[in-house]
Amino acid sequence: IEKSIEEPDGLFNFQMRMLHLKYILKIGGGFPLKIVLEIIRGNNSVSEIARRTGKSYQYIAMYAKRLREAGFPLQQEDGELKIVDRIYLMWLRLVFEKCWYF
Image 1 (cartoon, rainbow, N blue to C red):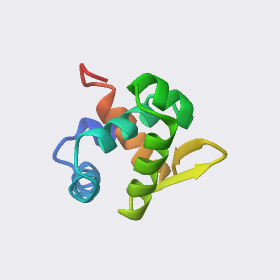
Image 2: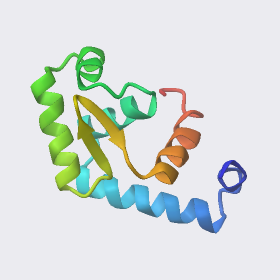
Image 3: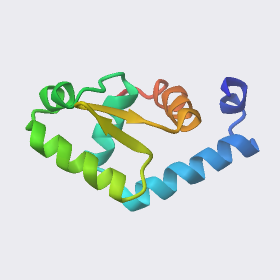
């Protein structure tokens, strides 16, 4: 996967960008994307995400539910959020770790 990321015009990278765009168009940018970025960083706990974003636990749980309803591959169990598509998660980590705001 890492070699595929290094080939920006490669088929795998193109497919992952299209999948990501599909999710972003469904969930919108802004706060839902901020939750996804926190999960990528390894902050899986709803309470940790709430603390880091300055929002309430209920607010994060509500947005997590909206993400799931929009088809985003997110699972919530015992207060933990997890992106269940491992390949997508790995791609997100590899792409966003190169961003200055990550």
